[in-house]
Length: 167
Image (tube, rainbow, N blue to C red; front, side):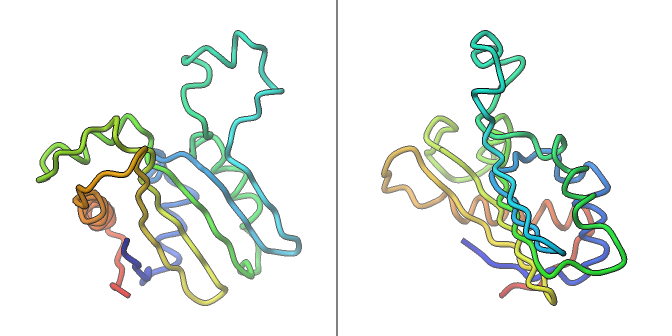
């Protein structure tokens, strides 16, 4: 787990809300505090789908909703003349990308061992921090996943010109 403070809030928020930069993530949860506090549970709602749709991986491939499908709604809640009082987004890397994260790393872990690679964004009204996290499906003595995910996030931010400071 690592914590990073974003240096240019405006640049980061543009990449997060207005571009497709973060579209390789699923939204687990969002809490946006403006004139109200809005809670979004990214878990897909079984009662919305027919049983055929629910079980069709082409329609519903993941437990959580893709960030790109909720980005516009979140943008609408945040945009305006006033800065939000705060927000928190919990994102998970789309499972299809996990193999690429592990590919060139010194680890014995396989994509099937990993439950989630998490990125939490927290804004408190003055600063934005990113916190990485990992979740395995079962206990394994191999501790190589955290530094692997931390490094992948640092490279991702650098690739997109999103500057940060280590906390």
